[in-house]
Image (cartoon, rainbow, N blue to C red):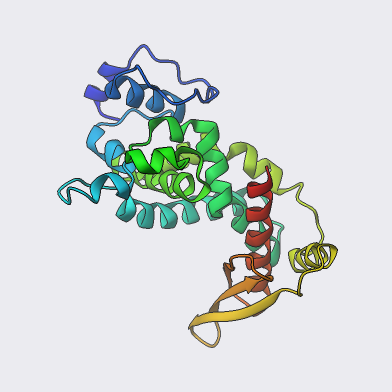
Length: 258
């Protein structure tokens, strides 16, 4: 945080993330962004970064000179992956790769990011085109998850890796604690039981890519069940990637039914 940013908001409290409010209608855009900075615990030295992170592509499309958050989303996905992996290894050094992959998938999944976005009030601060707003964009899982990743990237670019870690602790702290209490049942088994209970076809796993060296491979696997949209996961072994994909599928179903 820069001294200028500190001066703008020196009186604000930084103790805990307050509950997210509803969408701001009468408040000015500046007030909405200042309130959002309070909720995430970071005051931007470059406010334009935050504005861009909260601008959906639907706003930029009619006037291509307007920046939107898709590039930040790409960067934020990688930054979140790093700080989540770092936090998991620090919290659970005794876990094996499969357990870490499962926990990591739960923390960084789109539905998982959408839940954090809801808690931090991302929807209230988003810039959306009128059509996207009327179609429920402020509560859309994909839009919220992507915006949360973009906010992570903006915080990283504005304040560095330590600021990104601080946002992760503030936003994902509860989720990190919950990871340890996840059902110990293998996610592949849980997904198979979920499909059978609903009379659906058994999960089908497809290898999307394999990269790395023979000694340190990296697999990306997609899993599909019936007409449900496929989900994907990655891991250092085929089984780890399948488990991560199954966990992401289950997380997505939980979020949609919540």
